[in-house]
Structures are given as structure tokens and as C-alpha cells.
Length: 181
Image (tube, rainbow, N blue to C red; front, side, top):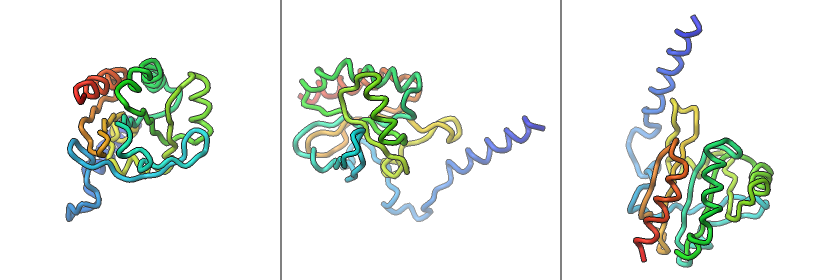
């Protein structure tokens, strides 16, 4: 009986993922993709200070990555890889921004534990995740892992979506940034 209930729940969860919340396909729910202008947003960083994306547009290339959860194995590996390549990103005039739904306090603890040297933003209501239309995986149970490279003009020049290749996000972002020079 449990198996049947699980299959039923997964089927309807999957069906709901494919259902469009906006049947008229207006631009209100437009996905962020290559060529899009990065959406304007503000969130609190790991220090509790308000961070606005507008403060960087025209000044820095951006690597914005959405990840499922602080301190999970894949997310820790990904964050530490960004940390280890921080100087290389700086050489490409890029700022790294990690976004997930955990609290400011969770992000600060995560950053301290692993000596993370870049910005973590708390999207505890998933508003920015929804703004970017970041897909979930495993029938909507796990928040997606997507990285966006944004040029100084605010245009998305690359995106990489892979839940299970956490470290490849860093390699791909660096490859694109180096090609932009």
C-alpha cells in the first residue's frame, strides 16, 4: 500500500511541475536564459546586510549560483571549489554569489566553517529562485543547482544546470569568463 501511495504522490507531483501557473504565457513567469537581462533583486547576505544586484551591474561580471542546501555534501564540495578558485574568478573581474533558501544565520555558519570568501544570499521564501525559474529535481523534492554567468552589462551569457556535477559548475563558469576576455 505504501508503494502505491508513493507512486501516486510522485505522479501527481510530477504532473504539477509541468502545469503552468500562468496559462496565458505572459512575460510575468519568463525563465531566465542565455540572452536574458538578469532580474533585479535584493536579499540579505550572510552578515545580515541587504545586497542588491543593481550595485554590481556595470561594474563586475557575475557568477550567480543556486544551490540546494548549506552543509550538504554536494553543496559543500561546490562552495569549497568556488572558494579555492576565488582568485581566478577575481582575475576575470567576476564576483561569486551563492543563493539558497537557508537563513542568514545558516549561511554565516556555513561560510565560517568552510572559510568561504564570497557572498551567500538567503532566499528563504524562494522568491529569487522563482524569479529565475530555477527548476527543482527529483519530482520537485530537491531545489535545483543552476549557475548563471552574467556580463557587466547585465546579460546572461551562460547557464549550467546539473544537480550531480557540482564541481563542473566552477569549471564551466571559468571557461566562459575566460572566453569573454
